[in-house]
Length: 323
Image (cartoon, rainbow, N blue to C red):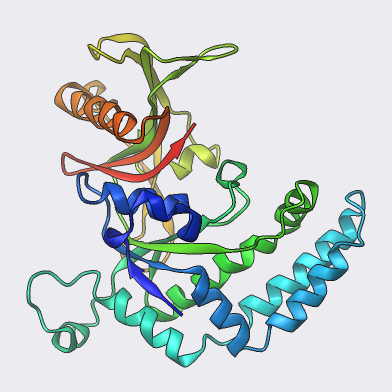
């Protein structure tokens, strides 16, 4: 069983803790990355053993080997049984206590005593995201839980994210690719409730290739999950990588945004009433974003995509992919 502060990881640990955790850990020393911690694959193994779930899940995975890919109903049945086995179990006490100690320290600044802090019942809002060991991040096989608040909700969210390794879609993909590694870390970070959020690539997409001389950005007001859910269309532009000059731009009228509920776990929709100058990222903030993209690309020596959030004139890096 092991839990690690995110800032203590480096990208060379990707094979052990997954790319998301390792990459964000490395970037946290030079960029604004939300504070957090990593629940390692060893913790999941400990959970399975302490809850007596390991043997049952291994038997179900053995059954999976005999199921043809065309039998979607049987894939779903095995997935349902495994997920219930994970989600419905009680978190082992030792692991629970360790997780909550890290969780309740996220909001502590300076030399505040932990026991004094906990007496305020000031539990932080966090995002709970997977960091798979196998190279399947682009397949989006696993769930994430955002704006999670409170100890019980956090523990259940962790189990839900663990269980998402075993959806029918995930089992299908792993069987198709002959992948039998179900290891993943979970990254728990302080939640950012952004004014803008989006994706930025260090090379612009073209019909059959990537243009390495250009940067491409898509973003919206509030949480970018609004785009993923089809609630809004993102603003989009392409810029010259060296100069930052905008080459093409598409600004969409956004009438609603998805934002964090500041009272309890979850998100809410809000009506937006914006003036023209409030519709998009401009000026110094764009230049800062371009600089971040160029620097990370140079640091990783690869074409990259970042997920970012803007809050109080600060740009937070939420994730980074090698493309």
